[in-house]
Image (cartoon, rainbow over the protein chains, first blue to last red):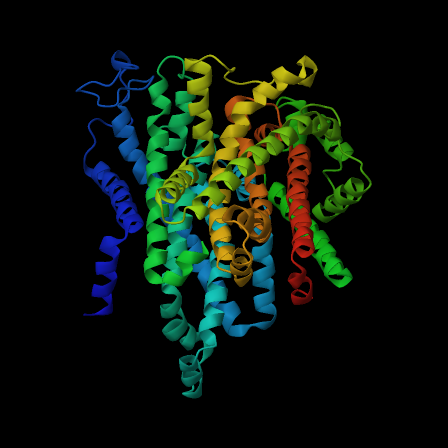
Length: 281
Length: 316
């Protein structure tokens, strides 16, 4: 039995992993489906069908502009996923590179990287994100950049710590003795050995990005109308809270399900990859 | 200890300095001329130039940065562009709302988290533990501003027990003002409670494996007495660290939650100032928030050294 077979047979019995995988699968499937099909156009307004309660035609009802809620929620999944993917990628690309470099070169590079990430940890990230978005202008892309910037120190610190541990191992010494350079060792030996930790952190940051984007959009700094976004749906729903309170319920449930799924998936992965880490949580 | 303290103090001031630089630089790129904000878009060009000179906006950036920092260090605050009053006045009016709000959230979160965390650890891997862990997973996943909306929906719209937002001011009486902060503080506390509960649980479990716990039990101390007298004391150290780190998130949360409840606190002030391009307010308030967070973490660091004597030697 190969290592991969062992992983999957354990994974199938892990409750968090299965539940998280299912919820995350639902999120991705919804987003993919919304590319080819939604019950109605997510931006299609119809004043005749304003604020309708759930019915066979509109499963979750309609909003104050007569748009179909289910369709906007489905299309909103695309928005949340793209925010997560891009902002985590920004953090991964820059942060992991910085972390690998810090572990390989040590000295002042390591010192600067670590102090910079200390600083980022002590700072209210969403506050700076709000400032950044206000500075460069509200919008989906800018919100993603602002969130992504704060993923950089998180991945840099994580990578440095994990990579430093691998650098101390014998097979790295062997690779150095064989004449391989620091860059080659980093990519051929260090990175494959720390991928698991990075992937686990990636799912957690993905969830945080969805929450952060929702908050920015709620404040009007993220996705702009008419682009579908769960956070903005909530701010629009608040004005209707006395007329149709359910409008404020659905987008929040969608956010919570997505974040819960990703967090459970991350927890499950962490347990499966390294059972020792499970205890430390 | 004195070396540890000195090292921490240097880091404290360096962090504050870097924060001020970052805030200044971020606002340099903020579009919109403050002179236009004050005088309006139709103001004649000569008036704009005169005001820019008066505000010192015609000077190079590094000079304006120095003036700002030196004035702040002396406790001199500029006047807000939009409100026309000293920023210190604005901040003081709002701190008396946001500080109690943050404190209430912390107290609620800590009370819930310690109870649930210890309960879960004491019932490790049994029904109660699984239940607490599931609830806390849910607590982390729920956005605080949505929870705020749901609280409004239930307690203001459906039950009518609370107002859906606003703040009457402390002069309206202690109870009405306190009442207006209850729902916001619950919304802010829930996520914190979920995070703290998970840390408390794992920290208690970790300590329960220690030899001194077995010794305490062996000498005949009851399970309950061991838990409260020996385990909790040691388990709280990492929990306090997390509380310090989460303080930044709590303050950030107030920006959104104060907006949901239309509470005129610090978070709402900074958010509105950004919208109004009132950059002197933004930079002072953001720096103030950063300073609060950095100070809280500094205190936590110090507490850590006091509670855990091993750290003093280790960290020198």
